[in-house]
Image (cartoon, rainbow, N blue to C red; front, side, top):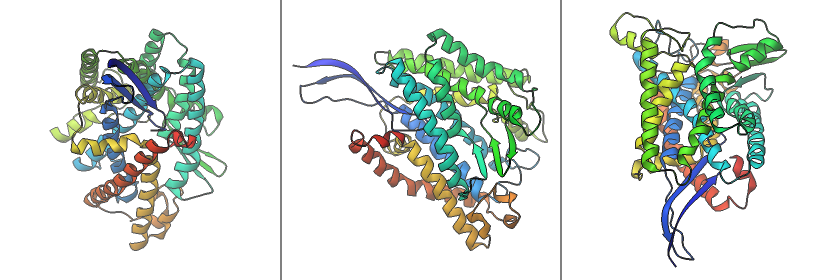
Length: 423
C-alpha cells in the first residue's frame, strides 16, 4: 500500500560545533522501501564556512605578519589581507547559530530531560576537546602552558547553559536571545582589572582578555554572553525546519530576517549609533573608509558583527534549499563531518608549518608556546599572502577525500559505535 509521510531524522554525530540534521519531505513508499531526500542547505553553508575557516588558520601559521599586527589594523594592513581576515568572520557565528538550530531539531524526538542530558554531556566533551585536544594540536606542547578558550570551548559552555534555557517558554527563549545579542554592548565600558578570579570570570562573560595563572597562559577569546545569544536565537529558529513547516513560509521568514539584519547594520553603523565599541571613520581614501565601515568587533562579537554575519547567512539559507550540483555536493561533505575536519585541519596545518619552518631555518615552530612571533627564535618566519592561499587550496584538496571517507564510515557504523557521536 502506498501512503505519504513526513519524517525527521537527526544525526548527532556530525559535529561538536553544529550538530547535523536531516529533514525528509513528503514521499511515497512501499513496505520495504522509503525514499527520502535530505535538505542539504545546512551542510552546504557549514561546509563553505569551514573551508573559509581553514584559510584564516593557514594565515595564522604561514603569513609573515600573522602575529606582528592585526590584519584588521587599517594603519598596517592591505586590502587583500583585510578581506582574507574579514571573510573568516562568518565562520563562528554560523557554527554557533546552526548548533542552536540542530539542538531544537534533535529535541523534537526526545524528552526535555533527554535533551538536557545530551546538551550537558556534549558541552562537557567540547570543553575537554578544546582544552586538551585542540590546544595540543595548536601548540604541540604537552605541558599545556598555553590555553586558548575559543569557539569549541564557547559552544560547549553555551550548550551547558542551553540545557536550562530549553525549559523556558518559547517566547521567553526568543526574548532571551535578542536581549543577549542586542544589549550586551551596553557592558563594553565595564572592566574588572587585575590578574585574579573576578577579572577572569568577567572576561569569560564579556571582556576578552589574557591571564597568567602560575605557569599557565590563558586567553579568553570567546566571552560567552553574546555567543549564548546567538545559540539561543538559533535554537528558536530551529522551529522553521521542523517537520510540517511550510517551505515557502520558511524562505520568507529567513529572507525578511536576513534583510532586516543587514539594513539594521547599515543604519546603526552609518551614524555610529550603537552596537560596536569600535566606531568607523573616514580614512585616507574611499576604499579604506569602506574597510573602516566593515571593521566590526569580534572579541566579544558586537551586535553589528552579528548582524553583518548572520544577516547574509540567513539570506543564503533562504535561497540554498535546492538540489546540490557537482561542486556543492563536494562542499557539503565538509559540512557533514565538521568535528573531524576541525581537528584534522588544525593538526595538519601545524605539521605543514613545522616542516616549512624547519626548511627555512626556524625549528622553534615545532612547539609553539604562545604564538609565532611571540617566540624570539621565530622572528622573521613566514611567507607572503599568495603562498598562504596556495597552502590553503592544497590543504582543502587533501582533506576532501579524508572527510568523504569518514562521512561514509559514520553512515555505516553509526548505530554500532557510540563514540562516533562525539566526532
